[in-house]
Image 1 (tube, one colour):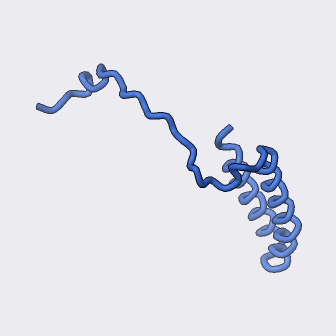
Image 2 (tube, rainbow, N blue to C red):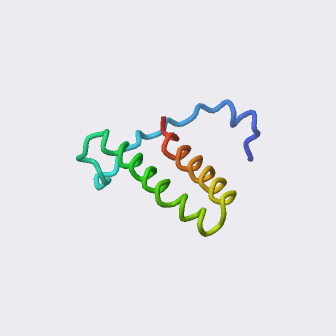
Image 3 (cartoon, one colour):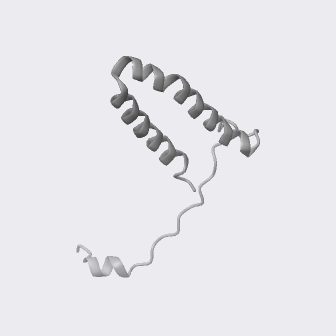
Amino acid sequence: MATTPSQAAKRPARPRAPVKGRPGKPGAGAPAWVGRWWKVALLVVLVTLGLPLAHALFGEVVALLGGAVLFGFLLGRWTAGL
């Protein structure tokens, strides 16, 4: 017999197993600030080289819009775990 939504809602949820980190995770031996600052350095390099290149190839509007979209995406990904 199929369970009705009310019966399924009354059942207690099963506890989740704790999430364990992967042993081969890159940067596992490095201090925490290294993981943060290499992202900042990457962003600076991308802005310094990428925006003038995009401006030369595609124009000012595309370079600014593309830079804003890319920055928003990267900022969202980097702060997702906070």
